[in-house]
Length: 106
Image (cartoon, rainbow, N blue to C red; front, side):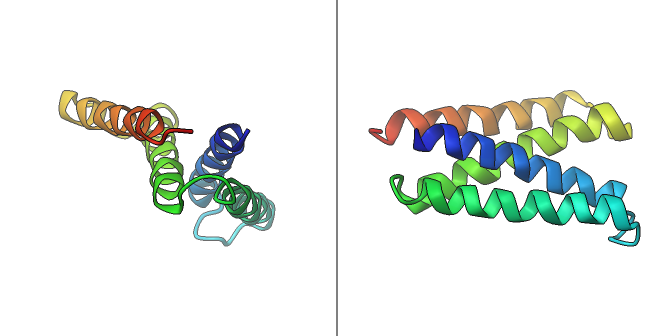
């Protein structure tokens, strides 16, 4: 169950990271509220996940999910570059996340 909680925490991390763009430097009230709520929910879920998972593994996976999701949405939503090198690097992060999950023993 902790891995599912960690996955959802990572999805909320993507939400708050992308929300930073929509909030325009936290200057727009509604996007800022959504960003802050996503941040708080993400932290609460991460805290729940580390009750059963090693903190180093959980944190690395959480940030990895956030990095992959945010970089991918940056390409799709904000016209950030989708160069081969960038896609390969994002893919390597995914490999690292899967590797940490498999090596965790949970």
